[in-house]
Image (cartoon, rainbow, N blue to C red; front, top):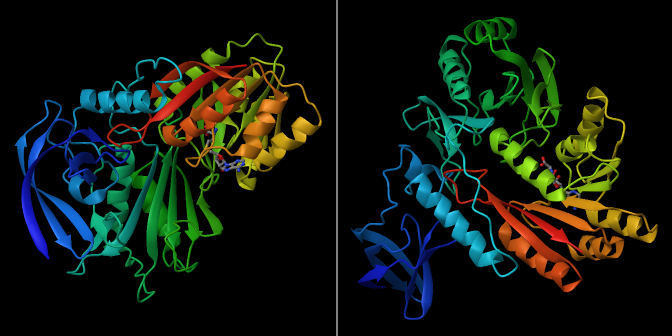
Amino acid sequence: MNKERLKVKCIGIDEEGKGIVKLKGKEFHIANLLEDETAIIEVVKNKNMETVKLIEMEEESKYRVKPSCPYFNKCGGCQIQQMSYEGQSKFKQSKVEDLLGSFCKVNEILTMEEPYYYRNKIHSTFSHDKKGQIISGFYQENTHDVINIDRCIIQDSKADEIIETIKGFMKSFKMKPYDEDTKEGFLRHVLIKRGFSTGQVMVVLVVASKIFPGKNNYIKALIKKHPEISTIIMNINNRKTSVVLGNEEIVLYGKGYIEDILCGVKFQISAKSFYQVNPIQTEVLYNKAIEMAKLKGNETVIDAYCGIGTIALIVSRKVKNVIGVEVNKDAVKDAIKNAKQNNIKNAYFYNDDAGDFMVKLANENKSIDLVIMDPPRSGSDEKFLSSLVKLSPAKVVYISCNPVTQERDLRYLVKNGYKVMEIQPVDMFPQTAHTEVVIKLER
Ligand code: SAH
């Protein structure tokens, strides 16, 4: 083993928020180092492996701040809290410009006025610490060790209070946290969802067994302490897995779902369905996407990768017809239900792979005016994109949470007759390295 200390200057920040330094032509990525900062690092050579560690900061960036969360270095949920919000926005802006700037000028990122407490979905894992105390929080990055977290600055603070209450109840209700190794104990996780515009709160108790002694008193006590809770669900998960939710659900209190309103449309949200986690910025994102589409009212629109149909249902009021396609069966069921609830009759939803579905539409020579697409992080695929080109809508609005795969897909579309007209980054996830981008293309 061979150790060496060197002074380095950080030349940029990678996708995960880590600082990039170059040493003898090789690139290294170091956590908690910002662009333009100089630092002393240690390079350890062990056989063919080289690792680097930050030893001491020398010159700090003007964007460096003290992270406001005490768990920042351990948790891994946020990556860039050591940057001021101004610094974070600049970082995201230049990331998008580097990746997509060659297609067209990039608009200034739409930031959040209050970049904290924005998450409407909160998950906490229950466990014991080494002294046997009950703890609840998140898994430490890349491990299965729970770190105790009482307060998280990016999630709804009401949810933190409810989790504290649940933790406090453990002793008086003789409830034990589940132990993954010995398979003893009861409570594994608590999931909380909150409809920001309705105030409705869902509490999901993920437990290892259906037998819940003292259930009625427990529910009574929890509701008494937090009358804002609208529904409590027991989810049974007794498998050895890092997946939070099991298959079986029992509604203990209320309707088993909550509602939220986005851009004037009401959505039912169940324990399992996907719903955007930052509703304030989701409205900003959707409004920008709709503005880009410049709708006249007579269009037939596809909402590909539609989830529970949020975009399709919001757009339906401004167009002739909208067709949503989504691979997750439960999400499609929610989308159909949401259309009925809102009395929307011009929205049609299909449970299919978006690529396969597009191939079918292309073979039928269907006439489509606009495609709105919002694929997962892995992006779209050639099956989808080639059929899109064949269907040849005049406009495409492409929303993505991963500008790397978006860039790849844009290259395909540009090569096949589309032009990028507008690029708009939106900050959906302050304090984290993630960036959302909405792009308008025209044939
Ligand atoms: N537009 C929605 C959901 C976006 S998340 C919203 O704003 O809420 C991406 C969605 O793509 C997820 O719901 C996921 O289930 C779906 N998905 C992933 N792969 C897919 C595929 N191959 N075909 C169709 N849908 C897919």
